[in-house]
Length: 456
Ligand SMILES: *Cc1c(COP(=O)(O)O)cnc(C)c1O
Image (cartoon, rainbow, N blue to C red):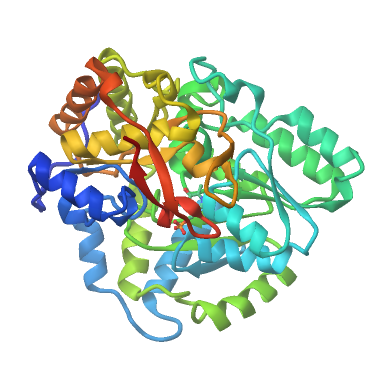
């Protein structure tokens, strides 16, 4: 297995609660892991967003952060790095990805328009709707077979996209947004061939094409591994080619920026840039900091170099693949093939005695916390299903999954083995696990604030 190209210099203690303490904590949290306190969690796989470890070089750069209100040195270091990586002539900083989404969609999309994607991420979906537009997902058909080893299950369905653009709704398409990698659908990568075809279709129909590039480096690594034409390329060269194909991007830099906060918008169009910049200044901050501190911009400038290091990416990819093997050997199926930033457990298959209305993915996630203090996120009917007024499930999600997100440079092999052992314990006697019902739920982005109770 490739060795991680770093050793540990600073550590943070992790808590170990008793099973009784965990049961009490989960009860108080309304059985929603988002309501748990981080100091109740032993292994936190809720998100890979902003949860990575920084390097000594990043912290050294942060120490010389320039906090000037306008035109700080740190801004220019960040700008040079992002412009060199992406090639976009206009870069706007934002405090995190969703701020970029709000500014871009609020400026670019008109009410009644359609935003098409391989799969919208949850906040992306919400921001498209807040702009008065419709978010439409066109994942490729291969994505629907969780067990198949197709290399690029993150692709968009090109036939469906071509039909939409040429059909009666074509006029209403205001944006095509490709999420790399496809976080909403199994962390699967998008091939360069797919991006090239999207580029051609968008050009033919005069529709803007943007990337949601939170994991541009991890997508580039999987392209290099799985798309033969790109074998000899560096991850940075592949990422650059993806950016070259698009008219712009929004990036949550909390992922492949290797820092705890940050984001940016990249644009080619001068007029769109001017309008986005006005919105940015009014709502995020001046255009040379966009809601970020100088020290954040410094960490990001260094992180964006470190993240495309082939030694780092190969070790991270291998660690995730290894965890997938341990979990599969423990008797729990994961969405195949393993991606990099997360693994998706097939809870529907492990817990066939629970119907979608009893939220098997949520049950499995809760059990991982109860048995091992492991926190993760449901991606099934609780998150994606539609409900009636009484919070009863009307349309289930296509799959009942649980996402184990892997923070960058944080956990070691022993931690992963512990997670797999906890799952093995559950897989020995899955029938003991009961379902859940919803007690209360917010109007949008349900999963963040929903409260539940276990069924008897
Ligand atoms: C995290 C993420 C976002 C939103 O970014 P935040 O920094 O969390 O606001 C958007 N798209 C994708 C694909 C993401 O993973």
